[in-house]
Length: 175
Ligand SMILES: [Fe+2]
Ligand SMILES: [Fe+2]
Image (cartoon, rainbow, N blue to C red; front, side, top):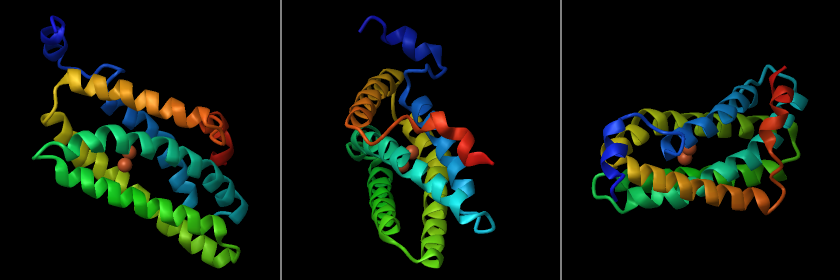
């Protein structure tokens, strides 16, 4: 409690702030989205990008729902954004599952493009509206507490397997 004053008055986001963590997570997702939505690219390259994107999305979206969105849904001013975020995540989940089951290449290509655009738009809204609103309606100690939670949830998902540190393979997705 005694630290409250210094934390708030520092003004800047620390690395423990959930906003910083979310922005960091968005970077590799955005790079993969660029490849996935580009139907001029070789299908193999887009397939590789999608294979990397899908687990990365899960290990970002689930912790986000259970920390940030949950917090937002409990705040009168923020709740609409939290619910909308959940709905958009559900849509993306459904599309990812559909894409995994799609064998026809043209249909696969169309679905991946639509998914990429959906998530691109979602991330844009999050960065331009939702996170700034959240910043206004929270204090740095809330953002650090949520950052801690976000990290714990993410670590759990990554430990559960099938989610091997995709960022290490970034170079693949970018040729
Ligand atoms: Fe996000
Ligand atoms: Fe999100």
